[in-house]
Length: 349
Image 1 (cartoon, rainbow, N blue to C red):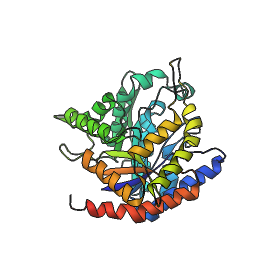
Image 2: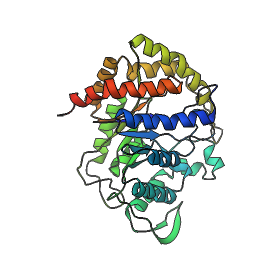
Image 3: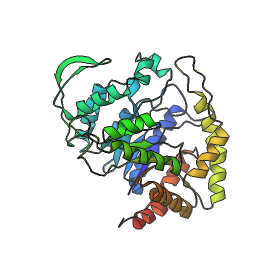
Image 4: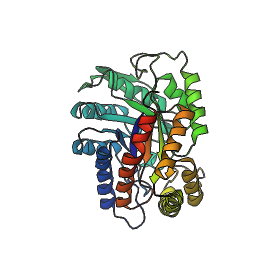
């Protein structure tokens, strides 16, 4: 079992940018102190939903502030980044951190970011596979060239080379059958988001297994030796309180304050319609399907997820109560009252 903290740098109304970012760093340090295995940073642009525009930059800073905990991106958005530059940054962090960096990548969405950064809608709609393969090649090959529809350049040496072989760990955010197939064909672990429960996760794991049957593993497409177990990752909202009613009451009150302006900040790059989720209904869903309640509730909910889905790596979104001191207290309680019991339960499985 592995347990991580998932930080969005969520800005609740009335909070300053500096206070949110400082609290995010302090939460990551608290996660190391509480015994978590890893901490992951989200990346968003031009909105209050999360005010970290470069997950890899924040990961680099936190790697310098910590000693043991692994640090990852959940996710770096490939549709607005150059895959070779991201490969270089990944290898750099792999080397200077002694192998503590984890790269999560995702397709992103059809948002105005594509216009601002000049990558265009095609990178989102049809360019993800090419970007992903070029990224993986940059992580594994000593020399690299490209002749694709999006990226074309002469051969160059890739320096520095990674200390972690064959490559630093890479996970792919999967929200559709197409991205599940893409990850499975390359034997890359999936990162599953907050919006689906155990039934949805189990279906995606089953689809991945079916798609990866007989998948070819070579120096570009493989994340590990063929046949090795794949360490999928599932994100979940987690909040501990003395009673289940108190925990759910807190998140039902606080989450919509963040979700309402945050979800409204997604702006399509074209004229496609976009209707944000209802923030109160979404908060209710998150409380219902995720570990929100007493320590015992959280243990049982997470244990059920492991048993139903087979996923043994959970990363917990801990910022739902809004106030930084509540976030740190939540991390401490999860580390002291929940994780040890889960580790004991699954120690020999």
